[in-house]
Image (cartoon, rainbow, N blue to C red; front, side):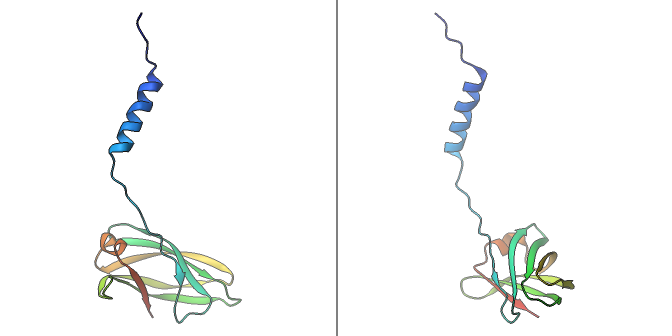
Length: 120
């Protein structure tokens, strides 16, 4: 008696095999308060090769103009990447998504950073 293996069963077996052979990867989503700017915080950083997107939240009751430089530091506090944000207005109790461009380093280096500092 011949057994007929369904197509979906074969696909399931292949997926289990491929998942077992893949390397484990991880990503760190950095978020936190911005030192020196009360009520402002950052989150949702997504990297590409020459730019990044970051969301800045304004939790104050005032409109704020925000812009500056993001410094990505390694474990020894050495700058490994630098990204510039152009100045723009963030309305009160809202968030704004910025696109920043790397002036030093790239997105790959910035992803490996351990610390994030701001220059204004």
